Length: 353
Length: 259
Image (cartoon, rainbow over all chains, first blue to last red; front, side, top):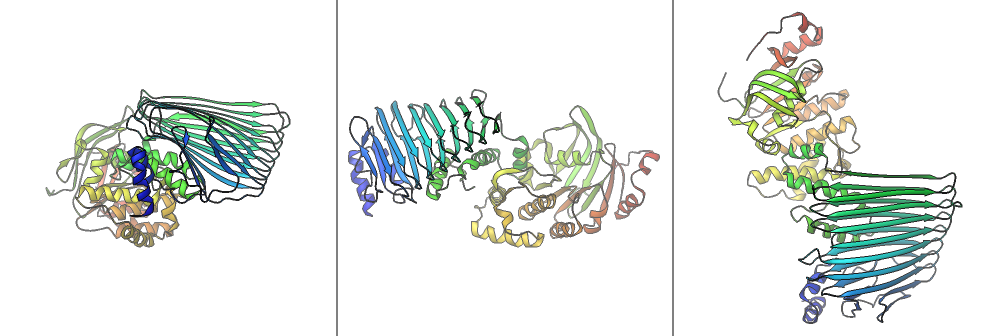
């Protein structure tokens, strides 16, 4: 028995079985640049790993819980900083996070919101990020509900990002379950040549509801943003997307691209999509588009004509639909972990794309 | 005709979008035989190929199709494929995001499952695929790409033949597999097809031109015009078409040359 499993075993006496099971399965147990875990609103020392935590990372365990990071200029951290917000019992939690990236720094953050509780949970969080000149932020957020009663968790989150000159912000939301998830992102490209790339996905079933609301403000010249959100709505689920690109008068020669593609797989599922452009500058290149449809009949026929069962073919095509987003995750371990989570949706077919 | 037919089509009438396209087809294909269906554009050649594999938009109005004694019309597309029927398409669909290797393995595993076998070992499978790809002049990067996504016309057809070589179907239908291929590609595709010829396997080649038949020699040639087989014969019939085109069909009475 390794040291870790011993630890986990001991832990399970204190925490619920679910929590230890969750950790045993986790791909990012060791391959991270430190891990901060909050359980039911409180920082959890036992589940966290602060031995390799980079300089400038701290956390608060007072009334306003959350993570505070100040990365000095030129800080480069290759492995992801792993932040986990776990809920395993009925609880209302609030988190407040602040991330400040100094000039020229490169940081990857993997933030998980995991619900393991069998009763109703409610979570609120607000995060503020400042990305200084030439810095690169890679930020992946996963929302998942692993409880048996998948449809009892509510989550309301607000993220504000300011990106300065020549910086690059990559954000990815992965929504895999929860009764009601509301995610708001306000991203300001405030310095010349700042670039934002948002590549997100949702796979909803049962009565799950997800609302992703993105507003990208181009306030400086030559800024670029690229947003792609893909969602799958099955059963009686409901996926809402509002995306807005706002280009200020000073943001000349900016580029904005906003796309939302949805698969509506059931008669009772619902998709609302509202892509918007609001442009006050001349000489800009902006476009937006949205589609709602079903799986490609021709592709299903092709699979069937090769003897592939319809169920398998559908899962294969759904994975293919999401692969475009998953492939964009830069960090290999996070990518593997997201694939692992997607496989839970379709245990008969492995996500190896 | 012998009763051990692999495929037997009787008085088949098929509608596609409210229009009858096939007006009573009779055709019997025995094990080991290679048949070619030729005909002008719009004669119903592709419809015939599609109705055999069970495409939904081909509505059978009359007649029946038997495959190894089973009533094919009662089987789903997937069941027909698992019975050993394969259609190589002229323009197969592109599936972005699905890795070609993965797709091939899923297809092979479906067949193995049906035959009560375990899933194919990944490493073994890679070796088998590489061997077949060499025969078709394909390089390995081909496997890492998405199914038919951004493939050239020639690559798509070779991918169809690759699937066929891996699935080793009992009955192979190739719909205009020669269209848009240069001579080199045509030779490689034909080599792949010919490598599967066996006394237990039958083929139906659907083609507009006789060129393909220089590479894959058929035992029988049928001319399809206006939804009916108007003439059947041997290899020489294809040569006559090459010489005279299809115009001679109009001047002759279109008879019911029933098999």
